[in-house]
Image (cartoon, rainbow over the protein chains, first blue to last red):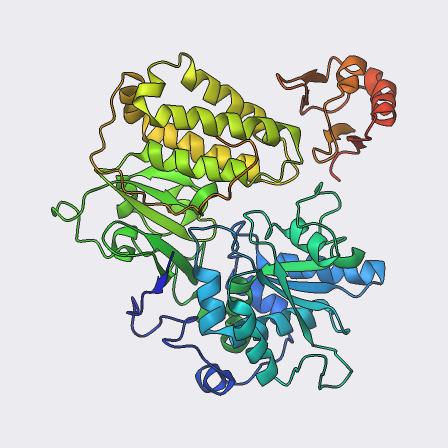
Amino acid sequence: MTISHAAPPLHRTALPRLLPPAPADLRAHVELHGPLPSANGLVAALRDAGLSGRGGAAFPVHRKLEAVAEAGLRTGRTPVVVANGCEGEPASGKDAMLLRLAPHLVLDGLRLAAEAVGADRAGTTYLAVERGSGLRAVLESALAERGQGRGQERGQEPGQHQVTLVEVPPRFLSGESSALTGFISGRPALPRFPQPPPRERGVGGAPTLVQNVESLAQLALVARHGAAWFRAVGTPAEPGTMLCTLHDAWSGPRVMEAATGTPLRRLFGLAPQGSPQAPVQAVLVGGYHGSWLPAAALDARLSAADLGVPLGAGVLAALPADRCGLVETARVLRYLALESAGQCGPCLNGLPRIAAACTELARPEAATRRPGLLADLARWSGLVQGRGACHHPDGTVRLLRSALTVFAAEAQAHVAGFCRAADATPLLPVPAEAPQEGAA
Amino acid sequence: MNVTVDWTACTGHGLCAELLPELITLDEWGYPLVQGVPVPSEAVRRARRAAADCPVLALKIRRQHS
């Protein structure tokens, strides 16, 4: 999948904040944003700015910084900071886009976060990206520009702020924070039992801040311009901008920086309601652990409060009226089931069953011959929810339940033996499946 | 106190459901379904026993609010 960067800014005066039109080397970056500011007062500025994490969980950034700094002082261990650029999700392209266009903004944020939590020794800052993403060369040259050569370092202390570049396996769950800290500690990139959390015991057992790369870039801007500047766009409750990856039928997947509060219709570049252009039947908000919403969501604002569902990492998809939402959902569920780490019994047992049943539901000729299909889906959903080390089962069930609600009429049609969709072209991307032993 | 399961460790032996039937039942795949309520005082000793006897030490006893 090629994801383009939608260049035209929405509000010419304020946006885009994060994404320059072309990759910014260090000189261009400093011209654009000015030199690296101080980390003094950063946590308070982040609190006043109301910056929330952009990796999916939307946790307040200042609280995570405070918790890690506090754990470092309490345990006497130097904290570790990990910039998380492992998107994992095939429908998301915003972190890779950000790292390509503005690597220095992310590296500024990483440096500032490290200073703020006291991660000031050699080997305490990491930048993690997916293997095969092609980002290593970009980031190595960005680090070299900042005076960091391979194995060489400059600075007050040897290696003090040297960033270690880490490439993780390109799997959906590799970017989960405990999987990431585990991998950097030399274990497989798998989520682990969430007690104690990485902020207490992460990389090598040290208190670890894992922060999405967009969160760090936003942090670097808050450090430069302050909270009031940050809040000048966006809604009061969810201020600022966020990077979104958009999928629709009329143009290719694209990354866009949008102020929160922007109506989704405008984000997608759709004509006002009632015009004949490209009728949409549903919108996916929050990616593959997200929720389907009815088309009326196009007239709501980009905000978790307004939409009533989490925004996740900003993946949005507009499903055309002539496609089948159940077919789309079944394909994604199959992908999610294959991406289960297979560690937790309910996920290991439930997700493949859920995916198989949803695949049957997506095919009317199979759905009519399978009594109790919807009841099975409902029961298995209840059995996997909240019963895993990570949120993979919960997110998967969220997607399924929203599909069964929004596409309820379509599901009834399928059970009765027909599908109302005219166009079978897939909208949501999933990677090609590697041949698996025993797979059909 | 309440009981939680380390899902990465649990392999569905089911011993916990035998020792703590009022708190734990098994799902259709043999994994524990834990009632999200505090352990009643009369079951505290059995809960500790269940945690200690779990063959893979997947059952965790935790004080509340921690």
